[in-house]
Amino acid sequence: MKTPKTISEKIISEHTGGKSVIAGEFVVANIDLAMAQDGTGPLTIQEIKKLTKGKLANPKKTIFFIDHSAPSCRKELSNAHKTIREFAKENGAVLSEVGKGVCHQLLVESYVNPGDLVIGADSHTCTSGAIGAFATGMGSTDVAVGMALGKIWLKVPETWKIEISGKLKENVYSKDLILYIIGKIGADGATYKALEFTGSTIQNMSMSERLTLTNMAVEAGAKTGIIETDSKTKNFLKKYGRANRFRHIFSDEGAKFEKVIKIDASIIEPVVSCPDTVDNVQSVRKLKGLKIDQVFIGTCTNGRIEDLRIAARILKKKKRHTNTRLIVIPASQTIYSEALKEGLIKIFVDADAVVLAPGCGPCVGVHEGILADGEICLSTQNRNFKGRMGNPNSKIYLCSPATAAISAIRGEIAIK
Figure 1 (cartoon, rainbow, N blue to C red):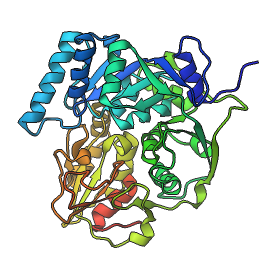
Figure 2 (cartoon, rainbow, N blue to C red; figure 1 turned 60 degrees about the vertical axis):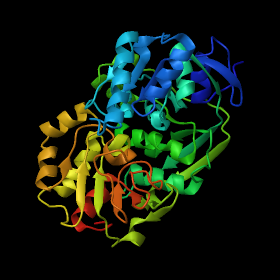
Figure 3 (cartoon, one colour; figure 1 turned 180 degrees about the vertical axis):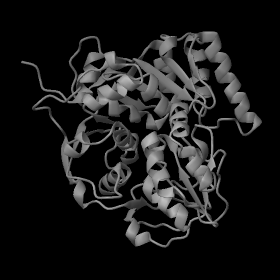
Figure 4 (cartoon, helix red, strand yellow; figure 1 turned 30 degrees about the vertical axis):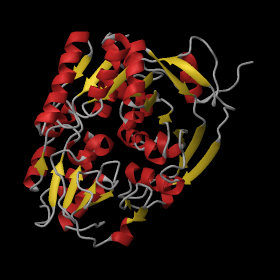
């Protein structure tokens, strides 16, 4: 009789040559996809050259994204981009150029399928877990090994079942939910665990909302975030031409979870993550009135079309506060095109926002919105560590697109 398994155990088992594995085991697993971005790509390439003189195990499943400083803001980064472009061309790797969008959004739009094992030289690779993949971030050297050899060494993580039921209140979104969860678990409370999000609330969520949850699983220390696939997953894949790659990925009845956490979504209110850790979560109500210098709507966490619609609905026929800058960045070129067709970009421009090309923008503190000393930014991104946006003498607060848009109009943290 087969031992019941969690999603993570099942996927990793499928990638170990037929070996049935359970949480806690160390395994060598075949990978379906490996990626790096322009911040981690050059070191990854350096290590691949040491291992195999640049030869890749599966070039068509090896992707380099130029998104963190795109377009480049200084010559050193331009040289890093050149290194990536030349390596990809010489070795047949896939290259995602400037303006295509953020790696994690592009992965789910074009590359990752249910049941895949994905590694990336970026901690938010776990985003792809929303479509039923085991996706995890690793260091550049580990990812180089995966790219060069087509396999990776890892420990099968224990799984925590995050069971969420109830209906979210008005103006409460999945970003509020995941910040609430991280506030309860702690920034390192789920270190090297797989967080499996389940329950009626998750079933009723759109793919965009689910992607927000899995994207931020790592902010609780998790190895990955993952969600059972369903008809919404299939429709999402169909939208991007991969309906035939749909599989029902789920945990077996009787699977062993290290911990089960039950959450009533109906009690959650709009929240903000305060400086300088993501688990420093407070209700918007308590922070109401805090003056802000900049608002940023975008990133791999909340730069999808649904997020832009939420923000545009609030900003329509209104202006940002004169003392508060507003930056909007769609997460991908596809999303940018959809926003143009729907008139969302015009709404943002009319609201006196700055709309930038798809990419990470100010989230990583390299360019396009670095804060001055003493300034405060309210952002839909996933991290608010000291110096994250390029200046350790500034402060970052995290929130949903709705809270961000409302606050941009008021010039202070606010709710309707």
